[in-house]
Amino acid sequence: MLDLGIVIVNWNTRDLLRECLKSLEAGDASVQRRIIVVDNASDDGSVAMVRAEFPSIEVIANPTNGGFSQANNLGLKALGFGGAASDNLPRYALLLNPDTIVPPDGLRNMLDRMDADPRLGIAGPRLVMPDGKLDLACRRSFPTPEVSLWRMTGLSKLFPKSKLFGRYNMTYLDEHLETEVDCVVGAFMMVRREAIQQAGLLDETFWMYGEDIDWAFRIKQAGWKVLYYPRVTVLHVKRAASRQNPRTRLEFQRASLIFYRKHYAATTPRLLHLAVLLGLLLKGGRPLWNDLRRSM
Image (cartoon, rainbow, N blue to C red; front, top):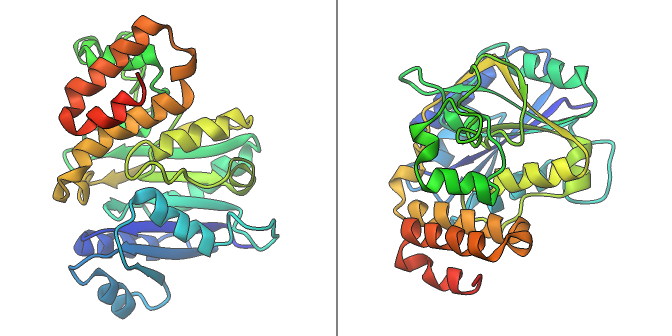
């Protein structure tokens, strides 16, 4: 049985993608894996590069950039997820960004940790950026209205070591401490086959951002655990693709609104509800106004 199906969504990050694929090729050969690159209509020669330099890797050339969720779902469906139950599915799926470098023993160690606990539905490693700092998104709590309020008011940055204000990125914890969390980040998100079969695929309402949190939310609702596993460290350049697209700033705030509306709006007290919407409006500005009006 295949251990791992890896889906890498790429948009105009050819050179970083090359290094990512090299790191996977240099990984532990005992991990039986299938790699699918889903290219979101890049114009930098990414598709040609993969086909020429990595002929064993599958490429799906998406004719349009339908967003991160849609592209990942294309890859997951190509692996067999989202359809009828099958014994041919990989034991795990891995969402992986093209701007990551995975250490040679990284995949094996992540698989071994998940195999050791059958209740783990999701696991992610310690992600560090090129300057050596922790990518704070690699371990998170769900953005409840209260947690979102601390972020919007800046209290989470002012008091990062506070268990109250620092909950979203769990900045009060040692980054080397293995911890059960609400969510890891879609830049490296390993998910158990059975968890995907229960929770379904990514919600394509999220164009970019928020889809990984929503997926973790649904998987935890189904009874699975989520683990931050810092014994594996992965390099993450971060925002290599998104910084090229001016749409991403709006989509970040829009994703926050979608997640809030989907999971919390119906049970949030009116005054706190309005405070959350006001905070999103201040962050997202006029382009977010039409979406916000539907949530009043």
